[in-house]
Image (tube, rainbow, N blue to C red):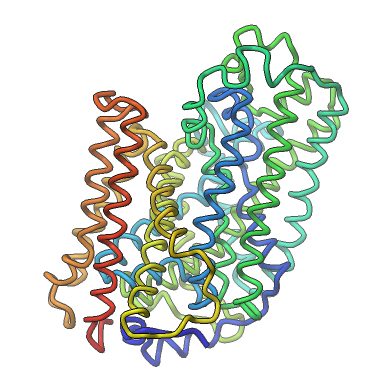
Length: 535
């Protein structure tokens, strides 16, 4: 059984545990791996190879490798949490346990906002479906008819998740098989169609725009968004058979398979683009639907037909998984007290949080109304995910520090090396947020900081820890986001340039390192002084 600390036990009220026991333990290794891989391989693979090449040229290959390695580090942090504390929606529960209600509320608020990621996948489906049904998408936005179809699709995906985890896993396995086959077929077909030698060195060299462009490609090229989603099996750890063994293997396997597919797609794109399109270098290569139009240029009409079909299936699979994950996050937020406990009700027959599914359906539709475009939505979503990962790195280090203070022996399921992986993961997540650029962060970070007044409103008149103490324990996150916003404005990633490169990235790393150790000390203090009742 996982070890729980006083702060955790205080939240495990009998009613909460009763609902938790209704979650069905139906997921094994392959089911969890399919969930993780399907969540990673969504609409990103259809766009990212071209955008990454535009940003960094052939050096984009390094960006994919770096993203895979660094996400694996962050994943190992979350793997330990999932293995030692398996429960539904764990990614929003662990920051609350480790850092208190201010951090828990802000991260929970980020999770509420990140439901927009599912809206982005549905928007991508509409964009490609417009190839067959004109009038769904126009000038980067959903039309009125497109919005109607998108809402209907959102309802369908919610209905498919309504019945049971077993049905969800089986259907997702079938979708995942198709999502693996089509990218692999695309890679093979493009290489067999004829490649152009010297592509890794011609047209400006391997790094025509400098190696710093590899950092820009992480966000601007869509690489971070494409690799994001590896945490999906952790959100199902409460419904897994033998989670300590299957969850870590599923997470790392999903990352490894996805990065291999993305590297193959990047190489295929670099080698298959006709020479005539490179007159202005890689920045001059521009398709609305990269692989689909590239296949048409190469007279691979059968491949283009398959790609346009998969452009509906791949984002659809990710949206399908996203609906289920969002419901588990909402379930966990209700456990945290950020949402009414009404939304954590588990249907005893299916084991699903039906009320949470309905709430997230409403949020998805609301996100599609003002934004509508894929790029508009994903420009903010990646930062929300990365902040959740950073909070998880703090959580695992705070739990370990508290265990050492109490003389608790090493827990089963702890990952070797997490003592240094956690701070590196926190710094990496912060850098990824920073590299997404001022254009995105000027919206994303103030949105997250809006969780502070939400926390104050939620805690007004509440019993338990004084608000002043909770503010002290969670002040590190508020200061971290405020200073990061300032550095983004001063820096070279879309900012004013007053803080030149590479000093801007070094300043962000120094900030992240200092804040991490402050956050761990605050977390250990919170765990040590938490009263017997926090909920």
